[in-house]
Image 1 (cartoon, helix red, strand yellow):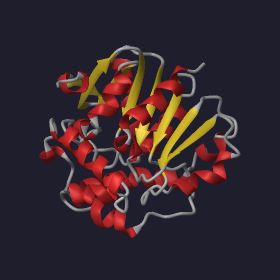
Image 2 (cartoon, rainbow, N blue to C red; image 1 turned 135 degrees about the horizontal axis):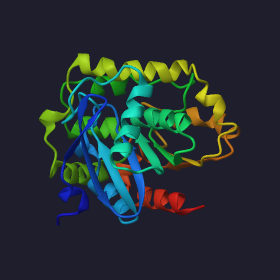
Image 3 (cartoon, helix red, strand yellow; image 1 turned 90 degrees about the vertical axis):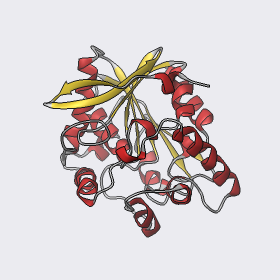
Image 4 (cartoon, rainbow, N blue to C red; image 1 turned 30 degrees about the horizontal axis):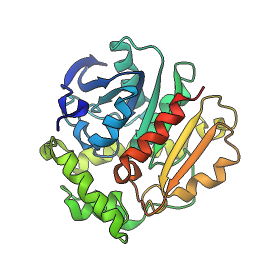
Length: 279
């Protein structure tokens, strides 16, 4: 069955001198998505997006130099965040919420702290807070994540909980849903591209603008969704911050890895819809 996300057409906008690919679909309050490391328009689970699109206008885009977008991914993560706000300018959308997964969660936090008056709420999935975090990436993540191409077996490790048969079964279903529209040749695959993501990640770790400290005073509500065994952005790294972030809520899905919203797309989208619907 074809759905809103499947039927959404790719459009293009000239933003910051680059031709940026984007899609917009759904109905309701606008929700801008920032994508993961190596993610493109079609690597989101469509069931997750379609469930959200029942209540929100979904805005997706490819970063510069990634997928169908021209240019180069900026090394400065504030510029990456700025592409999203420029896209919303292009669409004549003033107020909106943001969501980000993995690297995109770092970008979404950057966008939020730089646009507190314009962005209402933020949803952060499978990511970590700015600054120094205690639990590092597991080496098994990079062993898979930096391969030129990933297969389903890699995805079990990268995004799910390979030790759980339930998680592996949901990975199979998510993989099948995504494959219906995905052109894998568009996924970035070279070390040169990877390094551009790492530049932005390093800025977040340095946290020169003290975004981490700003969680103590920010008024914007933030929802964090984590898997209980994320080998890249460990769930434990949020725990020291939670007692000092009064507008933050944290949901942890069990038997899950780096992509909890792909393992339980309707549940995760339901949590997000409820969170965004609250005053």
